[in-house]
Image 1 (tube, helix red, strand yellow):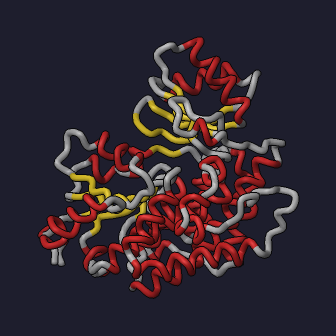
Image 2 (image 1 turned 180 degrees about the vertical axis):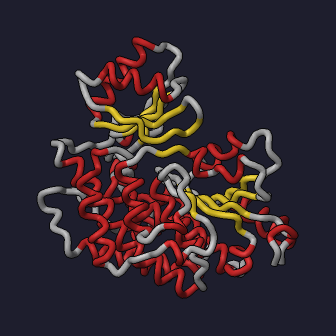
Length: 380
């Protein structure tokens, strides 16, 4: 099908989502045809965990029983535990890729979908799910590849948390503050009303007290910054003494991503990926994937996993660069958002206020209904 004759899609995935277990639970209960895959993916995580000695780190103090948590909400661990890197990395990916696979199982031909897709991206770690979508695999191949990625994400979550331990930091998130206005002190925080030049100056002025890095530009003047929790708390007080109009909110993260704090993870995670049999070349991608690395097209990459990890672990990112095709007159009609959570969908909508492009949240029943009832008939 010629893309110019039909609605073109832009596929995106989020990178955070405190409620990812809720999304998995909803999908598990509403789509029995997804239950087997979800169980397989959870078993992959448990298998990898069996070869990791957690006796000293205590990353998995409340277990890895996502299968139990999905079926029994009252047995679900607290939000602080679920937001920790070793838990959130594998299970956020599982929620994302399960949502995507479920759409295909519901009747969308993956070949037809990708034939009408302009490009894909993902916020932070979500770019990996975007890569899988762009590979244009048939359903069985996609599921098999996703299980390898599931294993990779177990180790990636561990390596990221180990990176923080190497700085003597063992961040714990207060679950009672996660939904509060300011959030619990953590390793990342959003800050508003500060263009990059001014943010960099404030970071430099604060540098004699602690290290803070600009990590992700969400919107012009709105950034996520990264650092050790105690340094971010000090930086918050420093900024608020200088800029009363700047708003601050902690991001529930136990790692300082997109900055040099994760150099250890970059040294170890690519080997972990190869050990679980995961290797992807840019030539495997059938449509562009815009990377965290300032919107780089990953089709030009010789080692996609290495490049993705380099960007996620150590480089600052800008969301506007990753959704640039939506902002520059390309023939895109719909953004299909596969979560988890509504945050990145809302972020993209903010950029598209003056545009006719529609963002469809494919993780919620209303969005999925719109996808199948209004959009897909136009290209089927």
